[in-house]
Every structure is written in C-alpha cells, then in structure tokens.
Image (cartoon, rainbow, N blue to C red; front, top):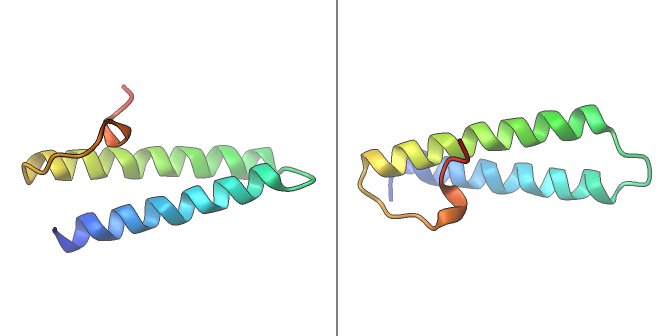
Amino acid sequence: MNKLLKSLIFKSSLIQKNIDEEYSAKHKNWIRLIRLKKLRLKIKDKIYTLAKRLSYKFPDQYKSST
C-alpha cells in the first residue's frame, strides 16, 4: 500500500478519535467538532481519490459522499 495512502488513513483515524472524544465531552465545542468533521471528510475524499488512482479497492465507507 502506498505510504501517502497509509498516512491519510492514519490521519483519518486520529481525527475520528478526536471527534469521538469531543462528542463524549461534557461541554462540547461544536465549532471544533464541525471543523474536525469537515477535515475528516476532506481526507476521506483524498483517500478515495488516491485509492481509485492506484486501482485499490476500498470499502464503501471511504467513498465520497457527494
């Protein structure tokens, strides 16, 4: 698997961890939460585009939601 692809997948999982932590916080920072979600979506789109270019098949969860 491509190093860039691995890096993007790792970043996506870290961002998801931050999203989960923000959801479980007593006082949620909604602006941070929205920014994290948008960032994760951008990374997911990059993952899907790169995987498509490399002809790598990914599960549906990485497909663009556009």
